[in-house]
Image (cartoon, rainbow, N blue to C red; front, side):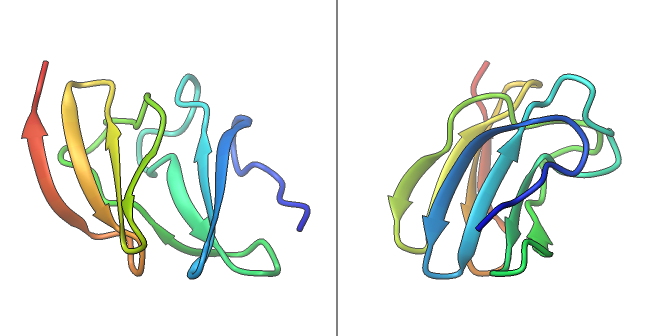
Length: 96
């Protein structure tokens, strides 16, 4: 699958049973939209990951916790667990 970045550049992609998980470079990424998202087989977004606070961006590598959950740290210091099915925030903790 050839996926084009939405705004900056793709720095990480992970194939999952739900689709292809993408993390784009956070520098220069629009604050109104999450820079982690899932795309379908045609490269169309299925969901965008929720964030603990508006304007924050996921700045660190994605960690797969299990087949349904990822963890990623944000620029503003939150470590967030995200549901891979729908992008909802399961748990978030200020870790900075």
